[in-house]
Length: 153
Image (tube, rainbow, N blue to C red; front, side):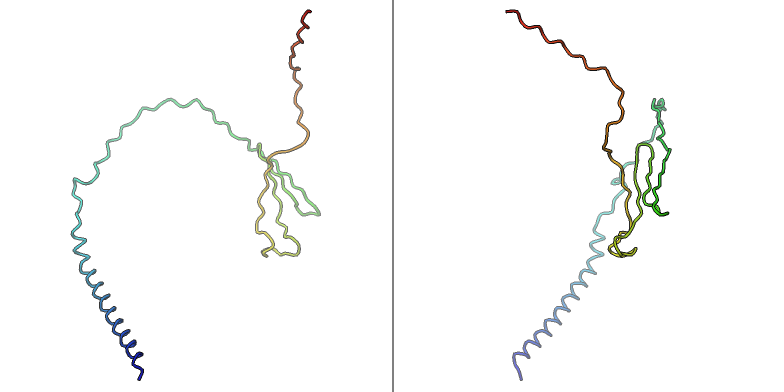
């Protein structure tokens, strides 16, 4: 008979039984002490509540502000570009805003829904435009001063 194995087995059974016993005692003590702790708390009396809010008074109506609200331009201009009967680009102009919407064409042999193809394609806003300056009305040339006469020698 292995004496060391017998000691370790009986010791572990003893520790398991005592740990279950002490955990049961701890849980029972907490369950018994809980109502005592809860009843020891103070219940707020009517003095401890917040005071009632003050009575609201009606204010006089002031004069209306002198502001005019201008409605933005709601006129839209939509231009579609097609190639072989298929829409390749849509240009939308509303007021000062211009944006382009293009269809989502998958790259290469990717099918819709594949990892290589995007699900959505966001619109592209036109931020600035480069090119020749727009026609600006001619202004009077800047006035220049006449050079000072040479000092006499």
